Image 1 (cartoon, rainbow, N blue to C red):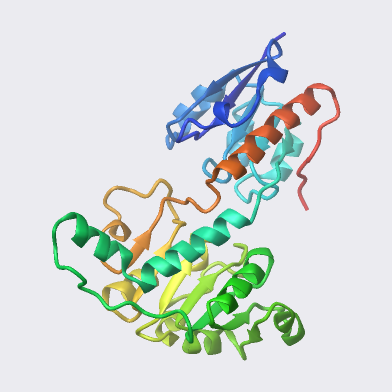
Image 2: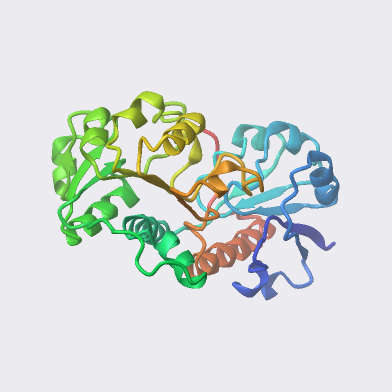
Length: 321
């Protein structure tokens, strides 16, 4: 019997072109959904006949209620090996195997620097002026050399951010709850005395933490007030780490110079969201992981995951706890 598989949220139509799906020919019927389904009823209807569902990162959450309403589902494959939007315990209870794929930290690292450079040199303003025959050289950019880069988190991506910052001639500060001075020094960074110390001293603050109950709302009104009025905040991690209302206030009142954002609480970002129009925001539509190499890895290993599951030997299985 041919199984049915849906690939969700393939915005760019990239799933079938970035992997060889022929190993599944005659075994699995693949259909791709390019539009994001926000309506729960429409989502259930679209997936009701599916034995396998492939999801892209955290674009479509799979909670206990959705899993309960998909009794035919047997395999859920997510890109990446961590997906906080899947209820793994509920999946296990429903008899659904959850598998992941590898993911490179290089693309989000590179996009973070694109945002930092774009903010520092006012590229959005200058590009718009150039295209619209506006003023020639209307802004004065900031140097990176000699400025201070503050890293909230010094893990896989944060540590590489530190090395690039040093290459630009920046002083690099780092802070996270359990970071030690020795660990920071090993990555070429100085441990800040506290989160507030890092915020006060940094010209560019970049977030590289995992969203958890401990980090949710880590930067709120008081923390943003601690930043320099000339400083920029960059978030390519998770939107929930920064209090949205506090960030909007800080940007509207000019209490920080601006923000570079690649992650949002609601994605796709609603058309009327103020972050789309604030002049001191440089925003991208969650492109951190979206590159040719990552997509080849994602979808290539999706095919491997499905093939292994069909053979009765699932690989890269994700479990609760």
